[in-house]
Length: 151
Image 1 (cartoon, rainbow, N blue to C red):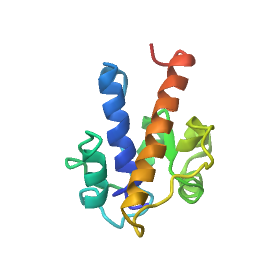
Image 2: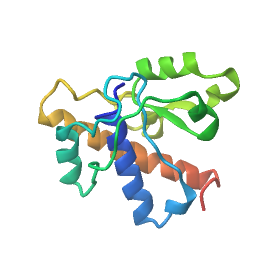
Image 3: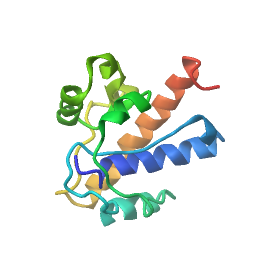
């Protein structure tokens, strides 16, 4: 929603994954929120700390709200939960709606289809978010490879 917890964590984790596989040139990755609560702010310090413990640096990221151009510019628009997915679908022109998916669709073995918002929870919530994001990132990259979009 505000682009300070889940989405920047996903951006950082996925960037690390593609860097490890030397695929950075194949991707343009950016996270955005559906609300303008924290525009220009760095990710939540708890998100940064949990990510740093997994060798993911989020400190350089800044929150932004998605813009209409994102629907055209990006091939995939991955929402963290159904509420944010619905907000994106409502704003998105019909011809681009096929790009909007739940991030956890790429980790179907998990017991949930939503990445929970850890903002009001304790430290464990940020760890759980990273666990889910790592699983979905790996699944997403595998799907791109399997479909031939990435070689």
